[in-house]
Length: 468
Length: 113
Image (cartoon, rainbow over all chains, first blue to last red; front, side, top):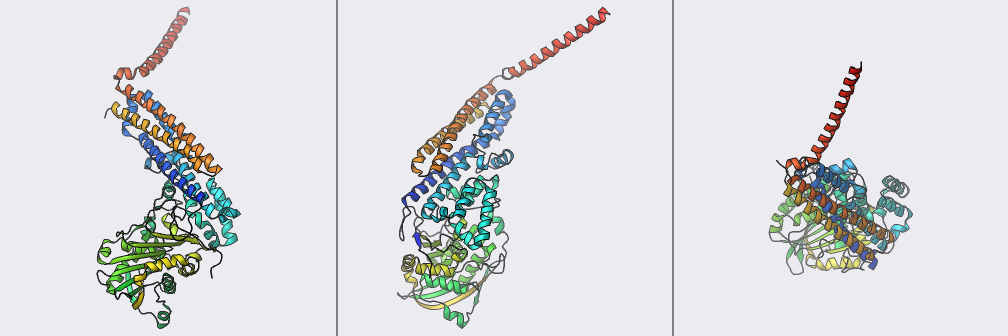
């Protein structure tokens, strides 16, 4: 049984079913955060243009033609960019800005656009605190937030280490999860490293994460570690395991099946005869096998990084192979039910022109998956995203549940808090199944209604082992 | 390639437009605190707005200086470099006068011996 009371709401400021809309003050603060994001971008544009002017060859040539007035121009321009009450270097828009910021220290907390973007993230944190009063009631979290907001990074690290030591990794990560994106963004914006500024900017202005927040290394570098063409090998389930597979076709049952397959890393393909007599397919995509960084399984950490950045990863290629081997006929209707990294791969499939042309993907349900910035090719695809607010994994694309930006107003999105904050426990398929059944049954019922045509007699269930 | 005064004038116009943009942001930030039910955020918005105004003023000044710079480039080379020439001439005159005075004082001292 779930402990505590589930708080459910949609990610949308204007709300839609199921659940409550955000409190009025939260809504005000989120709108303020969005306005500040726009304002910060405008100021950053100015900073970028002026920084570019400093390196403009036409201006440099003109200095020799009239050194007296040229010196005044240069002095004034430098003061505007790098002065104490100036604008900043435009690190977010120009490479020259990054270099100038490194040399002059006029980036980070000295840069006006970065400070405005930081205020946007602070407004989000306050908005989230209205929804999650425990954030500021928790003395350690309040002190941690205060240290990050004040750009006292050593103190913030010390606070977090103390939380880790006193509460354990799971509880500490779970506590920080609701504001993970905002705190990471603040650190990236306010520190002296201009190369990670893009992370803070993307978070504050509603764009996907492209580099990691500490050093600013592009995430695509990590994805280069993956190797292998990706394969799906059909496997026979033992009678004992096969007997445990739930066949009622509900989202809760699918999550339990994903949990069941987790030790083996298998994907499941159900051939269903619907109540209307038509045959359809449900492909169940598991998440990270989690225990290895870079093993044989396609669902390892390296694969996860690659999947979030590039659509052509080993796991995705393995799924193409699965479709071919399973003999799914062209034109067949397919629903994709996924958890964690499986959600990202499901998105890769519905963004693949060849597959979308061959099969009719009609439904995609992603549970605990970072899919917010993905764009399926077929706009009529019904998409549902279910996330626990204390689960960090769905925020890895850079959109936390407190984001005031909504890239897909037509998706069915639900997030909730169930009172138990431990991570990674709250990310597990078993916990999500439990939450869907107990804490957010109305969301589960809504998803089940949408999947009605995929419920009926399971004619065949095949398991596939996915590997690099 | 020679300096292009028209290009510098365009820079001045660009800077002037950026000053307007900064002023607009300053006004927008001033109007936001009404929606910020938090004293810390309100204070930050006021500070950002004041800094935007300050930057806008500095940009206006930069636009003027760029315009002046553009006119200076347009002037004939001798007029453009007049201040530098004057400075060099002044320094030359002082050095010359000094050398002449030194020379005369040495001649005098030699004559008296």
